[in-house]
Image 1: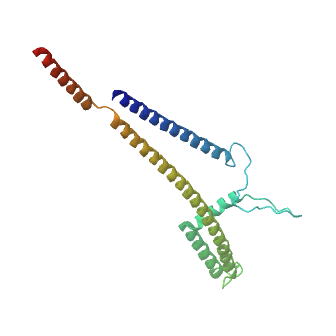
Image 2: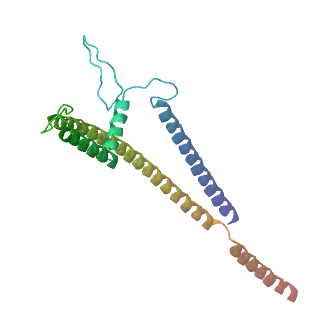
Image 3: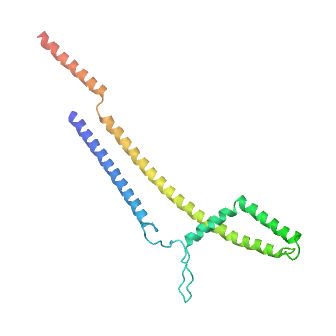
Length: 210
């Protein structure tokens, strides 16, 4: 029985060591993949930035060469403008400008006025402001949607890794419980020793009577 128990302990210990070795190898593979992804990102380690694959090419082949522009910089500028348009400061400044415009062109002398009633030039400026503000806000919303999609993909991948790690740890805990169940406890050894002592005492009694 002792030899069988030793074999079971050795087999369970070898199985646990093998699973721990597999866990270390998986962690090393994940760290290598993360390093490779970081190295492949554009704009790092002094490498020239490349245009993203999910954005259309800005340059067109032809005789006329249009000036090149950075989509990322333009997107950041549009986000700044959209954030400013959505603040109370912009509303206050626009209200002040409109009031000053109307007061200037109604109360001051006619020689100083530049936009008489019905303020056609003011209407044109507000229309231009609205026509530019709408596309900039839409562009900022598209960039925010792209960031949200990337964050969702990262969260999904992270949750998948957490689930895999949890399942692996669950299997490890189950194997450890199984291995501990096969290990001889103190109470079991004590009971076995007591039974052996009783058996020895029982064998001694007939020898003493003889």
